[in-house]
Image (cartoon, rainbow over all chains, first blue to last red; front, side, top):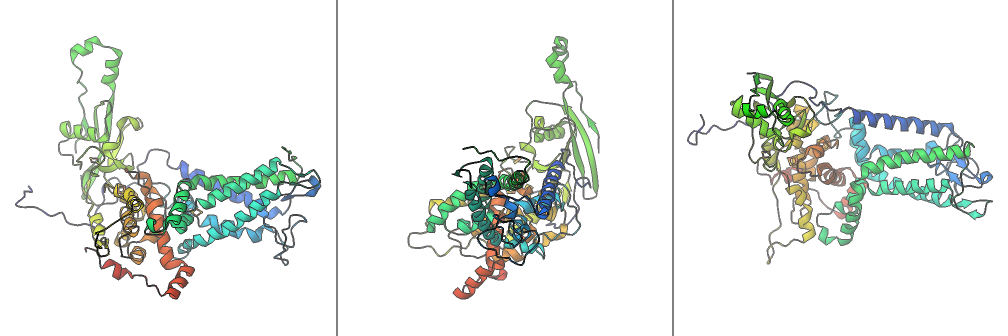
Length: 275
Length: 286
Ligand code: SF4
Ligand code: SF4
Ligand code: FES
Ligand code: FES
């Protein structure tokens, strides 16, 4: 019996035997649905985009159809192999003769791969580390992001800036989509709408980035000494809370925008002029 | 270990005679808790069935088991209001507070109640959480500049920033669910865990603090081990956005100090020094 006169000190134990049944998880709900959905959706996106990148056709709707629509996967089109009209003002990679989408995809791909949200999604879904909360890790050894190669995730902020560059370019594409060459000069078609929504979603996704939130003001110790940075931080913080939703929305919409341009370019559908 | 089955005869004969449908339903309604009983030598799940009461939380049922079927069942609790952080356990495999988990919100069937998995077992639902106290001793204390003639002054925005982190009730559910130590015991030697990342973030965001803990956080607190899978945020009963507001900001601060070539160049040019882990740790109580 423990009394005040005779207290027994609880020994500090790091290690020791664990309680509870020895099972990978005792969860009874359908915890596997979430990682399964993630894996399915990301795989579908990867398969679709790989196909879209390598078919190397139908990515531009030009003057023949009185439009100026380019698929976001192929923009900026800077290779010699770009179809006429799709090409930006400068051919930067004149020596590039295979699919032009391959040169530019590194930027957005690196941005999304190192994104804090996608990291969470693929660590859970693909790497099973952990598959879901309170479900045992699929691996015996674990070093997280403390070693090569995952330590490279720390360069995310640089990809953020590259991502911004792409946003500017895709915004220009959206503005260009108002052009209706040979059909009244300027107008607004469903294709214009698609590229505009795409650009807006990409901006929202980038601006809700955790690295952006840190760089704009989150990194300061004393908000009161940096009123402007604090202001910007206060604008980005509520966006950041929806980073996951924006990540999915912008990802799926990029694929949709590509599909739309592709269907119009290949003549499956015609792009209706709204006004 | 006894397999207790409750005596459902709590409805008196006169009431039974009235035999309204409601009473019949009440008579039939039972709740079964499947509780892990045992200690370091081993243990097992034991079923306890009791008449169901409306509006109960899991802790209520545990208390009724203690009062009727198993007086020797060990559990920790204190406030029954989700504020002391004592009654942490795993309910149907999910880390949670027994006093804040309503029975009627759980699916039909036996409710599994087990001790927190990450910490060594003492008995039944009680675990030895001293790991957390050991880590706490390694967190360098608040190190303010000497006070000016007016004492310390802080602006409201700076005061508000750390408030979220102060809501922590030290239930250690986040530590329990974190797979870095839940599934990899060896990491406990060099990992602080989410509860202490919020403490470290609060200090790093404190306008009066002078200690630069970034190297310490990187080298000894194991920020790189966290893979931001957010389970800590999912289980926190205080709804602290642990990953978004503490861990990722800490990771970004560590990028500033160790992984950003531009920041590195800036430090070289400006001749700025970053504190080593040893220097930062010197301010820790332990
Ligand atoms: S986000 Fe990090 S600290 Fe939180 S549970 Fe996951 S690995 Fe652990
Ligand atoms: S951060 Fe939340 S889950 Fe972790 S100990 Fe504090 S209150 Fe509990
Ligand atoms: S955190 Fe997702 S884009 Fe930066
Ligand atoms: S008894 Fe205090 S938190 Fe549950």
